[in-house]
Length: 281
Image 1 (cartoon, one colour):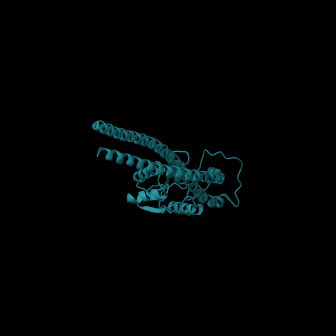
Image 2 (cartoon, helix red, strand yellow):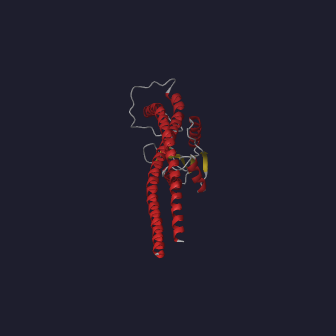
Image 3 (tube, one colour):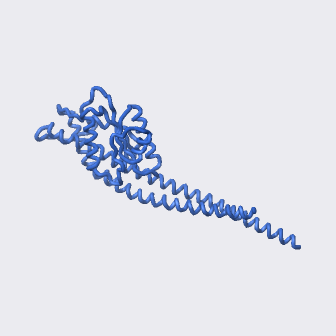
């Protein structure tokens, strides 16, 4: 009976080792896939930066122009706050989604805000908590589409311009940084931005800026989505690396346990043989 229990225990350990090795292979494969997606996400960020930087530079000139626009106007009374939250569609990315959801919930509760969600995880979390999701881009997909993001940015701008929302916050995790909550609307001109050269507005500053400001909002939201997308893949690479290392440690521990159990079985069998030989004398 004791021997049978020992053999069964050894089989259980071998089964666990096989299971952990299978999980380790999956984690290693996911790390490889996420590494490839991370490189592509970084390329998209690099491609978008020159245009975003040029728009920031032009927008900074608003300090020098006597001009008003609905996206710039600060509402005298803040009755309704909007929150735009960006998460991943999938899990297994460490604390990435959990942190986004926690910060979004805190912001929504603090300001009694309405929310627009980008990404499946934060969308599902808000609905589980029975918050009203004004609109949702879910799933976001592996390759964010500028046209879809631009349409959502226009919708957010319309909510603000019509005073449906009086202030808008953006909650996301920039690539290489910690989670941030920043003001999306009203647009705050970047006073610290260094401006070089002079601009000539044709036909006139209001006409040009009427065209550029909505594009500035679209670009701001799009670059935030790209940055969050890269941050997600970076977190998943780190999480899968850690999971692979933990699997190695667990396999080593189970292998030692297996060897000890096997040695105990062999010792028990030898004891039985010696005992039987002594009994035959």
